Amino acid sequence: MSAAAEIITPSRETQDFLAQKHQLLIDGQWVDPLTSNQTTEVHDPATESILANVPCGGPDDVDRAVAAARAALKGEWSQITSHERGRLIWRLADELEANLGLAAELEVLDNGMPRHIATYSIMAAGINHLRYYAGWPNKIYGQTIPVSPGGAKNGETLTYTVREPVGVVGAITPWNAPLPMVVLKLAPCLAAGCTMVLKPAELTPFTALLLGHLSKKVGIPDGVFNIVLGHGREAGAALVEHDDVNKIAFTGSTEVGKMILKQATGNLKKVTLELGGKSPVVVFPDADIERVIPGAARAAFFLQGQNCMAGTRLFVHDDVYEQVVEGVAAMANGFKLGPGLAPDTELGPLISADQRETVMGFIEAGKASDAELVCGGEALGGKGYFVQPTLFGHTNMDMKIAREEIFGPVLCVQSFGDCDLETIAAETNKTIYGLSGSVWTKDISVAHRMVALIDSGQVAINCHAAVDPGIPFGGNRQSGWGREFGMEGLEPYLKTKATTVRF
Ligand code: NDP
Image 1 (spheres, rainbow, N blue to C red):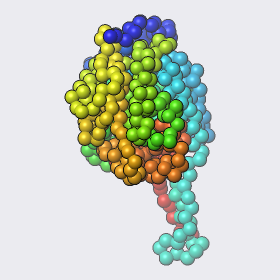
Image 2 (image 1 turned 90 degrees about the vertical axis):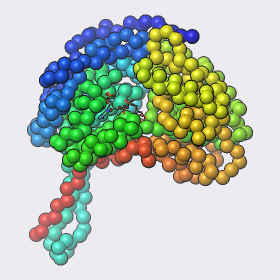
Image 3 (image 1 turned 30 degrees about the vertical axis):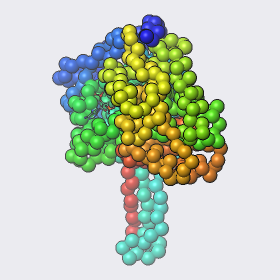
Image 4 (image 1 turned 90 degrees about the horizontal axis):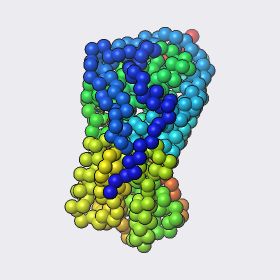
């Protein structure tokens, strides 16, 4: 069995972008690493061919990028009005929209996702996100506080707060949705008036580099947005440990998130963490099964399951268990696997041979357990890191496949009978994660009571993973610290200063 390994030629514009010399962006200049002579081969996961070689920066490059970001914080950027800051962010959105075709092709080649998903995600979580935050700079304000400190009488003092940019932000992003992951940090960072040093995932650097080019084109001042390519354990760790970085905004695995917390203690910089997930999808017998089946299939297999919000644990009432499992398995079997550039592709490859090996290890553990393999279960032969969408029935929370984040196209189904909602919710909460989730029912009381009982940062009713720039997103428990998106997503980029005037 093999995926359609057709070779589809990307546009001339994309080929030219990939063929150019790739460099680091520091203080508005494209530069080579100072001393590191390491490079990374970036592969197309659908064909395993090399797309380009990119340089790996080292700690000395992080040093000069942080110095540039620090200087920019005090320079022209600090003089720009809030209106102008908003306008620059909006112009970046316009430029990204004008280059949507190029950005989507780069994302497809780099990550493997189907083109329509790349286009949608760049629009929804890239361009719209920038436009949402473009509206914020002139709405960031403090308070006046009606107190009389130090024994003053009424009218003898005035106390107020102002919100200031937190400073230099180190952003570290994963490979699963490369461009949105950068924009989720860059947009609030710019809106707050901070500066950034970005270390994107070494497997998927191209759309971050495209954003670097566009940021220069729209006139974001030199040093405000810097990019250091490189390995997490070198460039990433140097950024996290840097004493002149004020905040780390990290998205990635829970394991690396914990390391980052330890590495960040030197100067007690602020840290936000968007980490892993193992989200539940809970289906009650009265739910609209025609909506549940495609909803559950997409919740599990969107981005080949390489999605932190993926609904990878499906809890279904006994009465509709067979119907739901049959329907989701039929959809999974029907998904067209192939290279993301092919117009009919619905599921692409996994990101790398390593990721395929990890996912297949979980699938083998599932096969060796008492779970029922309903469909899938194999990696495809030939070129590309393709794995069949896989569904295990009759799982339980003692099984490794049901407990741990797989980050691949593997869905575990568990049934429940007539029991109280607390018992069902307790099963959904039996992981270390708490990122997303959904409840499917027509009973509004059941829906809202379940939402209250599921310990996740986001729980949807009759849909899964409702994403919009205005909806706060982030994890409870070991799914992370803090929130991105919306007004709450701006908070970590700000600090409060309180002032009292004695008349
Ligand atoms: P990793 O945690 O392996 O890597 C994420 C980023 O951290 C990469 O840029 C990586 O660099 C870097 N990194 C690795 N080690 C260090 C270190 N010691 N110090 C600093 N930086 C480091 O995650 P993946 O890239 O494999 O992404 C998958 C994970 O991300 C999944 O667990 C998924 O759930 C989570 N995720 C969470 C999301 C959320 O919003 N909650 C969204 C998307 C993904 P390098 O390039 O060298 O790997």
